[in-house]
Image 1 (spheres, rainbow, N blue to C red):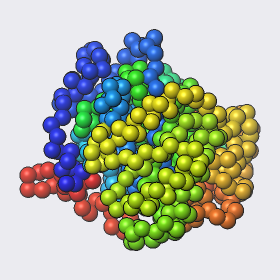
Image 2: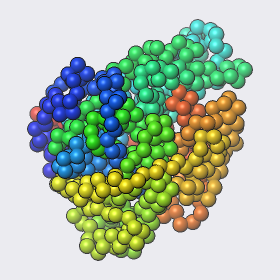
Image 3: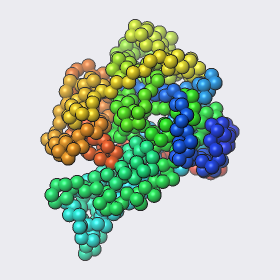
Image 4: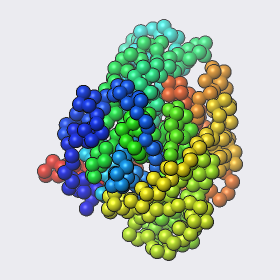
Length: 553
């Protein structure tokens, strides 16, 4: 059966049963129908003295266009932990409409390891991303309105962009103010995808509503005629933006097919943003369960690096264990096997591709100092010879491996992984960051590029160097760095899969996200507004005669 058919074949529990299981008082729960709800963020005040559970991070190797099933394994692991009576709670990101209608598809797991209602979660859900889009575009409207009425702030360079939660490459650069009204100010503008917007980053990194409002006010919208920054609070925009985000800021709760509680909240991309669900959601999950399973987007060089160097640093979190997900077909792809031949056994390509996995494991285990287990998302076509080779190579490195069949068997297919995670989580975890915040911006970017990606050096464009100088002169150089690059390679070249030859990272643009308290480095040919593929998934999505959604995987 297809994922959507499997999801519909299970009768879910009412969401009130899930919140009752977690002992959440009714006064803190706002239901969105039978199977979705929001938990009031103020409930954290009731939980502040409760001990945190164990935090389990799920990450992966560099993905392929086929997908590696990281979310599927995260869900299967949480279900398996509950089968072991460990009271696990999931903390996941909200899917973006961009990938749903683009190439990647939905982000609710697969097979018998899914969160439900999968159609709602993959589409409008509770409207959080729409609220973020509205808050972003309200600020944009207020900027142009300020120009229309005389520009008292003397804005000269505007850097704030509009956003939309769809892939639309034609909006990367646009002209606005072309109505020919007397006071309209024509100018060049552009759109980011909503999940790459600074509002999304702020939403996920804010600790509470007060912090959210403070960060929104600190957004730099541009620079005045004296080259001084102009902030959103100079337009008095932060109050209205906070109002638009107030309800969205409350974490969403749903369930897996097996009834495991799942808090799904916030959804920044990991290749062009920091790739983690909200801090408030993770903190809440840690209070509500004995184990919290969360994931970081794309490969460990992107999602896990940002989870650790940005989110953990900001929130004071530390994973007790890490699962690094891989598939044998992905390893063969990274070893040089063509996608149309990927089903066939090829031990040579597998041997070559294992290096990608070992690089990520080495980073997590010996650089970040975290306990690691490799979770192999197993497929029927994986041969005994391939599995034996992989097990042998990991054994040589002292790394545990678990073959996971959560797609086919749900939590039952991840019991071995769950047992190994429980054992790992009892060992000592000593998180070490890749850089100090006191280092220069260039030094921090180079630290990630060299230590995590394995780059030889970093080359900065003149524009990037000038922006770094401006940021440091303004006193904002002590923020963490968020590098935007391709997810398909450790390098910034998506075609350089094996990275055998020495490579450099090429930073072409630097963007200060002052509200999010991040410095974004755009590397290689990466865009903050993606485009659709030649044959987008949107062509397959429709309603059948019974008004059921079809084509959504």
